[in-house]
Length: 189
Image 1: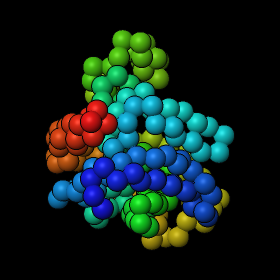
Image 2 (image 1 turned 90 degrees about the vertical axis):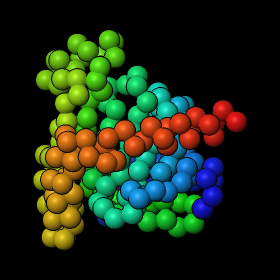
Image 3 (image 1 turned 90 degrees about the horizontal axis):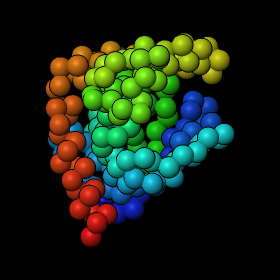
Image 4 (image 1 turned 135 degrees about the vertical axis):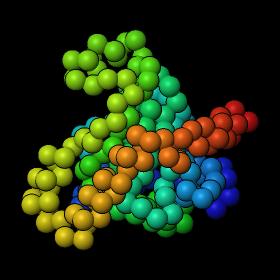
């Protein structure tokens, strides 16, 4: 796929239940995997909820791994949001994966002033890395019958991601900035 190619991201929840869908641009690939550009203003929707991106973002779909990592430009509450998911699979220009509930999140540092008090009330701090939706993952394992290999794949991915993000290991070391710059170049041309 050539850089700049329009792509569609379609995620589902286990059991082929629809989840987030949005459009973006293929930016390229590196040793970490494929990079997708999601410009500010992009419409995201799932059953019962929709929004437009507040800032530019790039998503890494690793060549191997049970996750998709989205890196945001400054200006929102988090700078990194990793969805633990089945490995992403391309079908032409459509990327598909199954979201497995668990999220590894790094709060922005510094937090936007408008969100500082809200983060404190939620018990979160600037730059904090945490796992979200563990309760949802436990509930859905039973409710939707996640197979044992899916549970172990999701947990292993989550357990490996947290220390890598905390240590700033590649690609969590600023690697994404190159791809954000490419998105800016592509959308301002």
